[in-house]
Length: 520
Image (tube, rainbow, N blue to C red; front, side, top):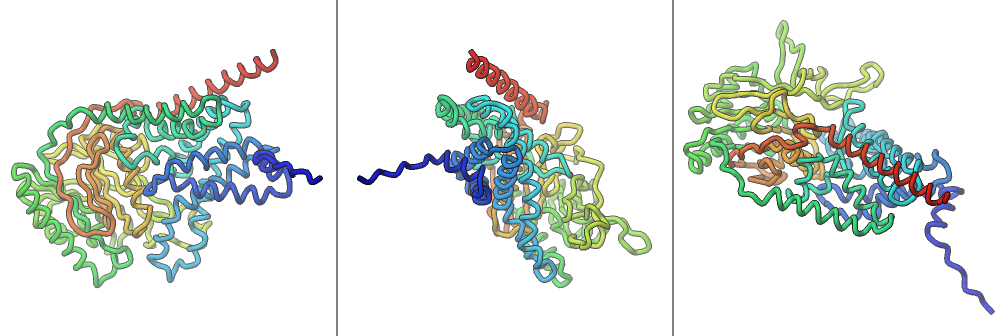
């Protein structure tokens, strides 16, 4: 008589692969599950995929027979996650493919590998405690600790933060006013891993309901009247590959001045009693407005009386007719073209605006032969007739707890050139980071992007007005009023650090209790 073959449970099969010659296949599986998990990020926001991807890392790291194999599982999962989450960076290389074609298959995997190494931390920490809730809490706390470290080490790159998955709407983001995006990451990790612990589905459901309830309570009150300022965000939609050509400089400049005239006219019709603030994106001007008085006069010529222009432009210092120092700047102009103030970028992009490890890397990847200089830090800017603001250039907006000057401003201004990334996930992810900063700080955020997405967010992260990716035009909207300082605005990253400590204390107490129960 034939006997029915006994099916091998999946966990037993997985353990065999992790311990035996199938380990390479297990690493491939970890990489693929990490890559699929990136679908939870903007613009897809497929959050349920995390119920598969993150528990897979948790189980595989816990079942690995050695710490080395657990670390490799964490590395490969994180590597896949960041390769998929940052694939859009290849578009920047394609803007000069003739020079950098060889980087196309290398750049994103090379960047994603050290970022993926931070996933080793939760993969090893979970092995310090027993299964169940202690392990879930230990893993979640370690995950967020790794995110925090990734945001500060090696100049910092806090991209693909787990809490960003909720940025599809203002409603689930409101808890960030108390705990920041890292606190949302902690909640998300606990919610998706909870089903692996006792009565965990109830915790997952409670987390979802809690985020919705907090959102409703915070968004329910009527929004206060806006400031008497009419915003005009100019989106020129200039492709990066044509941006700095000599034959396109004047056509690009005219495009911005003509769009400014259109926006000022619309603002005058919609808000005749408001002061007009025009915002151009990062490096929108092909001329050095802080150095070229005639270009500054032309840029500001369509401003109404009392109007202001914040224009992205390169600023330079010259000696003997040669530029010796350059800055990525936001130049404030009055209607006569006078320079009222200049905000220089403080947090520069490695390899994009300066070459780190100079002398050790044989090729230069920046567009210019001269590195950009960094400002000493962020500052609060006061201009006549509008609330004080903090200027954030490009990716300065992605750093939680580090987007305001020494004095609290009335709003945030973010100018960026996302033309580097084409029509891809990159601009959506950048926009999501900006939206989270508005919620965390309780400040309106004004965002002008070269090719989109330009937007105005109120102090609770709601979209007041926006223009989509790959479009040319103007966004005209009132400037929302600032909210009182949020708990996160007051305490910053101290809050997620305290939450991490709390989860680890609870994990330790739970682990001790379970061991005592076992020994008894």
